[in-house]
Image (cartoon, rainbow, N blue to C red; front, side, top):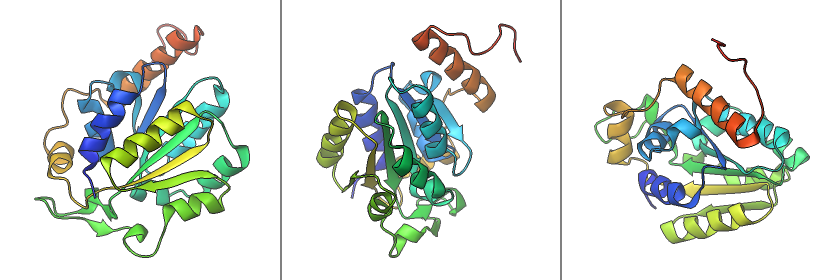
Length: 212
């Protein structure tokens, strides 16, 4: 298996600022901020809300690519969102799930995994997605396969669902998660920055000037 931190670097090199990227609270958001793209993305979404929020954006802006960089622990907390994705079938939505089989935030740190998620056992997220009606679903276990799957998803019609099997513990992501969150914005600042980014992309007004 591969490291989430390396896959996020690859992903960052493949997306453009006119694509909308969303990340859940935890290591994925902190690693994503390290790429310098945090201010044009919506980061640190509450547990279970990354994919559902991305779905809402994809339906509201059907002409724009929307990508959820989710994780197994976050997604499992709100699987009903996948059923809605399968029913609505937004062609512009890509869901990437970094599956390390454990809750990093609940672990002891120091390079040790947290409590296992259901994918550490028999749960197959690709099969779950297909069962929800998401036809373009795949599981990857290498950097090359990850890049190929992302290229296909970004160029083609979705919804697309990519499960990236990653190492249980990535010392780089553990350090970022627990010690070095980097110069990223706080969650309130990030929300306003993201909304302003969408306003510029769409040439629309979402918030009144001076809103707090």
